[in-house]
Image (tube, rainbow, N blue to C red; front, side, top):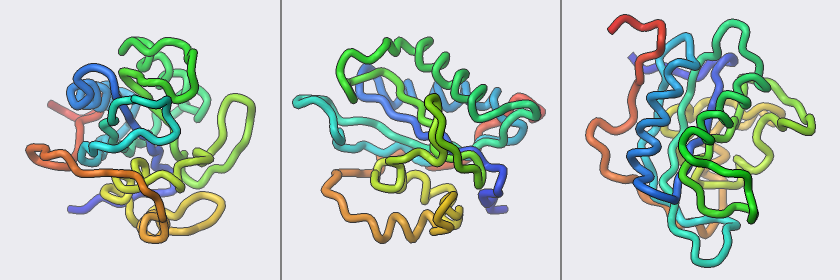
Length: 185
């Protein structure tokens, strides 16, 4: 049975370009399972060229997951948890904008919500201009209507013009589901 995005779906983009990026993202996806009341839907892993990064930055491995937030979770509390996971994987405060990093977790969208605060902007303000976000997102939620515009993710991707290099990494099983903390083993 194909699962579809709902107005309550939360999307998190993952990226890494330091260390064993594919393994880092796989482990991070498993960790995100405890932040969801249902199964976590995940995209394939994608090898992508760095965008707006310092010269000589290595390529990234990127993915997107969809989860259903815990009952009392807010976008701000989830963001805090994502930042804690980044630190656990060795992320340090930025010294250079878009510098290489072992793990980057971005809260891309929280259902249909839009907001702009000093801590958080929803949906993510640059997500629709980045193939490394839209391509994996379209894999798991092509018919998700982008908050504020109502455009479908598949349409946003089809209309995107960028010189990013992106290719799907061979992954046994491809995109799929990860058990949440509430699923039986």
